[in-house]
Length: 64
Image 1 (cartoon, one colour):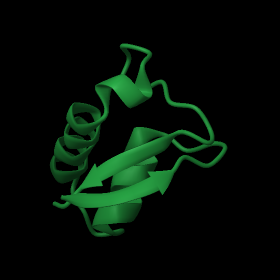
Image 2 (cartoon, helix red, strand yellow; image 1 turned 90 degrees about the vertical axis):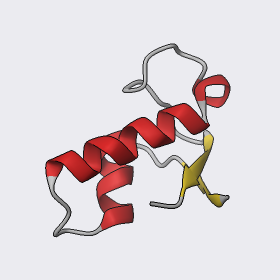
Image 3 (cartoon, one colour; image 1 turned 180 degrees about the horizontal axis):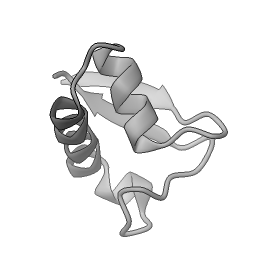
Image 4 (cartoon, one colour; image 1 turned 30 degrees about the vertical axis):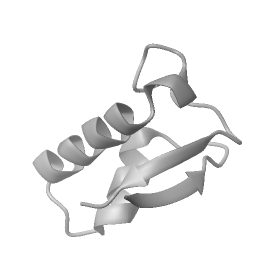
């Protein structure tokens, strides 16, 4: 399971993952969380590009 978030204007998968993991998270951990977000939401994202998300989308955020 995980949480569901609504993408805010200006959000990116990296920013969402970093907020989720905290300021001390290393790049590798953030990258793994970005991939987990993508894998949990390919249809919701719907762009085929894990870096292209839109404000107001609701995404499932897996627990790290």
